[in-house]
Image (tube, rainbow over all chains, first blue to last red):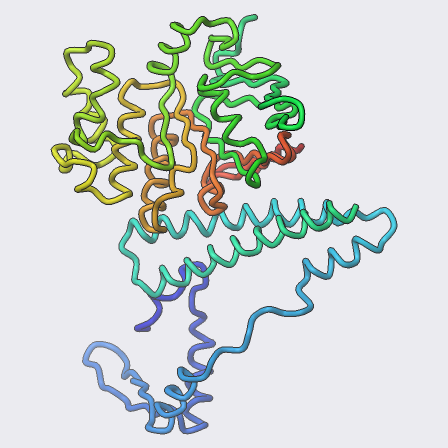
Length: 153
Length: 242
């Protein structure tokens, strides 16, 4: 698969899923295939975008992605409930989330450091940078929550 | 008091007050912290939390108002100024955000300085070795102005290591660097801890860089509020609570 090495190493492609997706795209007229004879091995199918598939792909590239911020973010919900539930402490929620956040950030930061060292394809580095920056933002947000919660208490 | 040979730094009940009266600022309000030999500790906290003050006290750049600081076998409070100067020169390496290299000296001359202060005849050879350690042998004849920020910081790290110090103290070592050079400097520090067992205490604002240390110490209002042991790949998970 041409793109496989550019995808995040931690999420390998599921080939079964790739083929069912290709079949669905073919049914919808977005890709076509031709059979190529091979001397030593079984014939293979080579898939290619149809004109309509190419048009839809360009359209998708030009369309902004939907925002990923879910207003019902789980940590935000926990903080909201921990403020109201007797015996619960929102600062403990912050502490547990921070611990897990730093552990995930360590993994992401190590993966990025390895990628930089090993001349990994740019697209992979961009994925890893996104993971690091999102975790940094999450940890900053936790610091912010802690500050406001302490002011309130 | 005999110290554990595995302990590089021991800070006990340290307070630090600057100024007096209305201008009185309590930078540290009773901090205790031990750093094992070979350990890489990151110190984080909001501005004014006392993290730089703590680093300065560990590095014998300032003295605590109360409490004690040990580096290796030395109780800093028991040393006179001459002994403190020697300790700073021989046992502690410093790395700062602003690199603090001398512009008119080449990379190798900068790195050789601590050895020359000691009157060592092998100063140039020692400097060349330290530059090789940070991967800058090819840049030894360059002036700081001819080097990238990341390279300048690596020269500063070579200078900090040239005396083979017990302890490397780094104050925002990646604060002046772009992300790619910052990552290079962090990879170097991590490698020094892993491959040479270098003890490192680093103050940083950068969470991704702090996450690469062995342990994270968080300060707030002059107190240690949280410590996280960060798991190393392949090692069993361990926790270190408040």
